[in-house]
Image 1: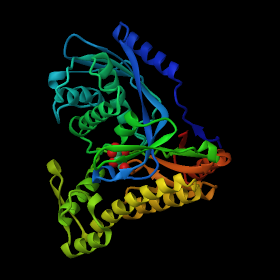
Image 2: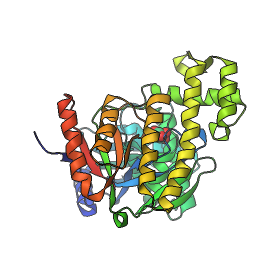
Image 3: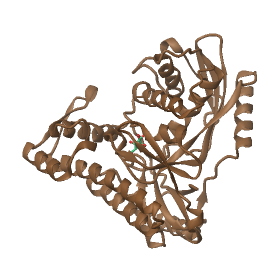
Image 4: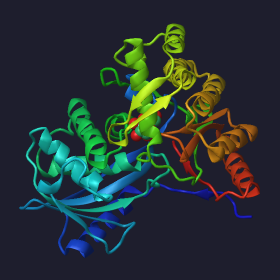
Length: 407
Ligand code: GLA
């Protein structure tokens, strides 16, 4: 059997050179510059960002690079190293919600969202080279949006990337692109960490007011590491389940008379939902569906306890208590698996095997339904854990997983 497969970041110079070369060979000219943005792994605080809650993601060393050049007209052309020879194109005037198909929607959507803010916008050509695995729950979409946002910001002199307030505005435009042009009803965690985090720190994001705090991780000093396990089980956020979770939370908040579930108190919320009975959920264009009171209560229980776990992890990190952080990751996984029901066989196996092989704790990370898990591992056990997970997947007849070091 083969050993674990590692997915490495692209060194900055190599990423820049590859994006520049792809741009030059596709568009027969030089780009104005190359910009990049990172993927993310979320340590704790899952499915809290659209509930006014907190989360604690960190940026991966893996980046998406975009070589970009503004155009004198409204045309947008995009090429990706993943689809060589295929040029995606549209005109800015054609970009409206519900009308843009294909991966270029992430790119053109950012320009649309910046223009909607009243910022100067033109068409542009862009070439994309990425080391963030796609569909792995590691925010490859946000990395693409954020890299494009940085490229447009600098090459059109928008002046937003120079401070945190401006970066928060760029992040908001990227979220809007994803929600309205791509049609994925995601929260703002991924774009915030890609544009607003600091090296060596996790980002404590409070989505109630968009404020952030930089939480030092100091994992190497503590002889620990974060291992990301890409289960290779496909994950898509536009397939309805993510939207159903979000709509259920919003419907539950309405029944509870709170703006978001962040404001809910657990025992009162559970009692009120039990008394209320089944929830009628409006899914917009997809009609309506019914969610039982029992299911709604479990969804709410996940969100409320998960926000408390974010605080607890921040506290345990400050105390250097990594065993406690690990236990909280395990607890978070159980909550996502049993109450929020967004895990899957591959994610459960990855987490169980990682902890069985010496990880201090492990949980699924990102939206779920496939994608990746994150394990907190003593530094000298990283290879052993990766090997154990690879073997367990082979024994179960599953596609081989891949591994990333998260810093
Ligand atoms: C996806 C979304 C995020 C967040 C997570 C779940 O990654 O893009 O906004 O909701 O799922 O925590």
